[in-house]
Length: 219
Image 1 (tube, rainbow, N blue to C red):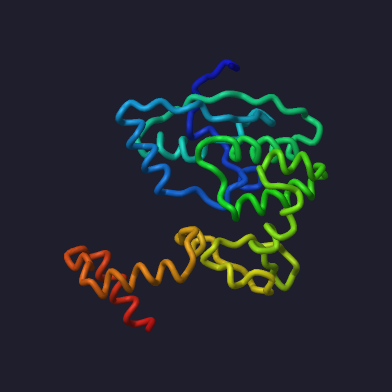
Image 2 (tube, rainbow, N blue to C red):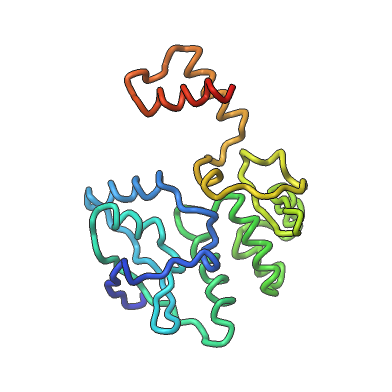
């Protein structure tokens, strides 16, 4: 195992050009934060150095959990990358690391990873080994999770937006997509209807009732 060291959280660079996930999940890092407080051990994050800065390749959720617990440092391991084509190698390593550990990439993120690795020139069999999807399924898997903007920019969509696959759209705001789970719209609405029909609304919760009022205005 490579040696580790403590990194100041404020000194770490979180670059979305490298990180393969569309967003980090508050639900996951809150869960991690609780586990850390109870004494659970987590593996060190992985970083790569460039120009005197340390870029996080794997471990955004663990780092957010440390921040939430008011910690200033996080244990990490430095991954040595070649100076030539550094960004390309950083993307490939980050995808591989995030695919292999416990918090698996979503299907949306894996579709994006396939497209990104293809653009980086990796052979199909190598990509299949990284994302754990057979080569023969690449085309369908990506097509079912991708749409494009009028300018031709690829957008990879969650299950909530799957009905938009293949269509041209202006885009989905990051703050909107970040709020939604990976469940279908039918599932989300069915849950809401079940809560209302069975009188299960937490009417004492001001935040819940504020959203109910907002829903009334929309409908």
